[in-house]
Length: 493
Image 1 (cartoon, helix red, strand yellow):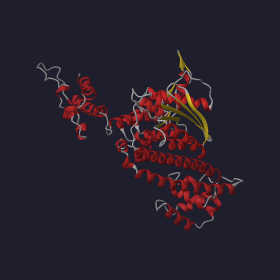
Image 2 (tube, one colour; image 1 turned 180 degrees about the horizontal axis):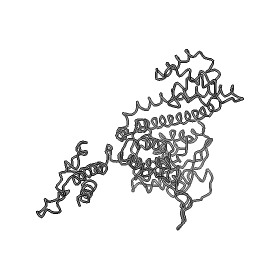
Image 3 (tube, helix red, strand yellow; image 1 turned 90 degrees about the vertical axis):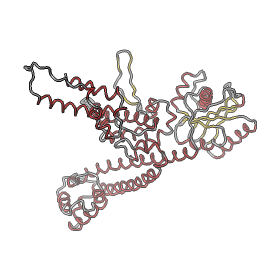
Image 4 (cartoon, helix red, strand yellow; image 1 turned 30 degrees about the vertical axis):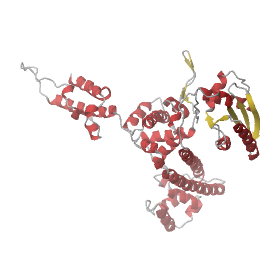
C-alpha cells in the first residue's frame, strides 16, 4: 500500500526531513535526508524496545527544532509492522511503498546503486522525497477506525486461507495413507470426503479394527454420524471389503496411527474454519463494497469479503491494469522481433491471497452467470486447460469488480446478452412463420410489405429487459437495438 503525501507548493522545504527505513528481522537501517538529498542522520537500531527509544529521542529532537518528518519503508512482510505502528504518532506521515516501484526507481536514479542496508535506506528516503514532491496518484483518505477494521478483516480472511490450505494438505496426505492400507474404503461412499468417512477412519483406522467391530454396532454408528443419510447395511459392505482387502503393508500399525492423527487435524481445522468464517460474516455490514460484489451471481459472502479486504481502499489503483498487477495476474511475455521465448504466463508478483480468492470466485461465478459461462467456454478450447480458462475468467471478473466498486453500482447482466437471447427467440419464430407461408410466386398481385425491424415494437424485442425493470425506450442503441435490427434484417431477406 502506498500513501501519497501532498504538500503546498509554496511550503518551505528546508524544514522537512525525509526518513527512509530498510527493514530486516533483527535491525533497521535508517537514513534521514533534506530536500537537497543531504544526509542529516544515519543510524542502525535493533528491532527491540531499546532501539525504538533511541529513534524516538531523535524524532523528538526534530520536533523541537520545528522540522516536519515524513517517513517511508517498503511493504515487504511482518518485520516492518512494529516500527510502522510505532512511528505513526511521532511523525507527520508514514508511507508503505511497493518494493517493485522502489526497485524501478533504483534503476533510473542517479544515486549510488550499491546494495547494502545503509544504501537501501538512503534510496527509500530519496524515493519518499520524490513521491512527496511529484505525487503520481490520488491521496488515500481513510479514517483510523475504517483502516483498523479493514486490517482486522484482512487478517481474518488470510487466516481462513491458511487454515483451508493446511486442511487440504492433510486431506491429500490422508488419501495417500488410505490407499496404502485400505484402498477399497471409499467404494461405499458417493462422496469421497464426508464427515462419516472421517469419523470411521478416526475410530477404526485399519481394516483389522474395522472388521472386529460388531456389524450392528457399526451400523448404528454410521447412521448417527451420517444423520441417517446412509443405511446401516453399509456396515456389512465395509466389513466385507476390509476382510478381502488387497493391501498388506508391513508398516500397517504406523499407518493406522498416522491416519488417526491426520483425521484429528482435519476435524480441528474444520472447527477453526467455522469460527473464523463466523467472525468474517459478522463484519460484512461494515463494508458497503461487499454488498455490491454479492450482486454478482455465484459470488459467496466469504469470497466477496476476501476480495474486498485485499483491494480496499480502491483509490490506490488509478486504473484496472494497476489492480491486475497488484493481484499478480498481469501476463508476462518474452519476445524479441519475430521470436517468442516460451509461453505467456501470469507474473504472480502481487498478493497471492487476492489471486487465490479471484480464482475460486471465478470458478463459482462461471457456473452461475451466463456471461461468464460463455466467456469460460470460449477460453476452454481443445488447446487450453481448465485452469487456463478459469484464470482468464478471473481476469475478466477482476475488471468487473473494479468497475462496480469504482462506480458503486450493482451488477447487471449486460444488454448485449439479453439482446442475444431475444434475437434467438425472434429468429426461431420468424423461421417457423416462413416455413408455413404458402408460395406466392404465381400471384401477380402486389405482395404485402415485408415487416421491417423498425416496425417491431421494442416491447416485443426486449421482454427480458422489461421483466428486469429496464426501460426499453432508454436502451443503448449501439449495444442493444442495432444488433437486433441487423440480425432481423438478415433473417427477413
